[in-house]
Image (cartoon, rainbow, N blue to C red; front, side, top):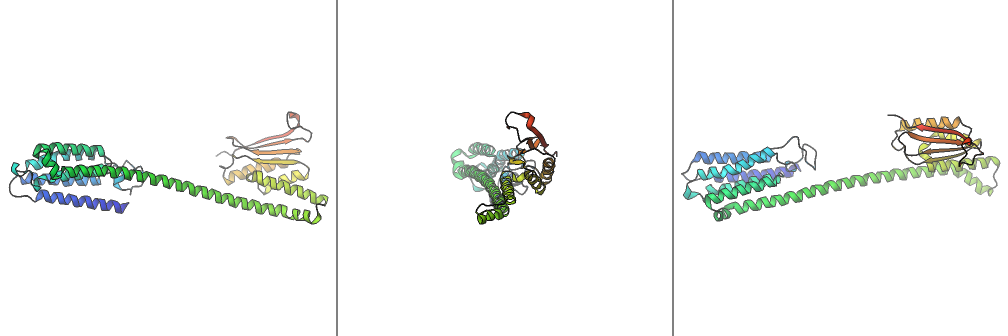
Length: 347
């Protein structure tokens, strides 16, 4: 974008030099001092509308300070100065030229000069100001040399330049918006791809864990045709429970929690783990705190049926319910031996 800005500025300065030379190369006669004042005012206004930047404003497309000036609206004060110059320059040029020479090249340079300034003003996102300047130029040039002469000597070109500048501004802004939207979509796509990669890695780890846990006992089942010893049956039951835990609530598990769940199952308890979300925003340290509390709770209960559940809740991270073996699990509150709500870690 810097290179584009430089090219546009060089082109604008080249037009400025061209119109300034036209205003200075003049025959004898007229007021040279007033003509020089008009040229000087024109050069100053051109530099102003090219370089003026509102430091408190950030362009809608690029928040960096190195953003092209065309992306920043021209400050209002600079636009007003440009309009004042558009009104004064034709008057100065007309006053400095003999009436018989007012259609000569050195007396009509302001038609293109003011049009060039208004073109820059339009590109700097002040199209209303630019068209007001063109209207001022039309009125003053028509009063000085007549509308047909002004149209044939450069006024039409100035109108065309401002029209093209406004169209360019519209299409460029649309391109910027489309580019910003495309960048946002690309970022969302990259984030989705990263999420999918993490999920694939997690599934691969779960499969590897399943093979490590269930592989030996499954091989033993095949070898014996299902004729397992009591110890092997217990091992198969524990392996099946561990697999369910990993599939349903892997985020709740660490080595201490797995060991506590295995100990509860070895004494005959039924343990069910559900992770229904709500812990994704916890840090590793906070998860470790929640898991530690879960492991201590499991080691301190003799309930026959234990349900561990996490769900989105602003205060509670985990709910642990333990019931006796005789309860129906529906309405008998006397069989509830454990009710523990693990709070979310405070930050």
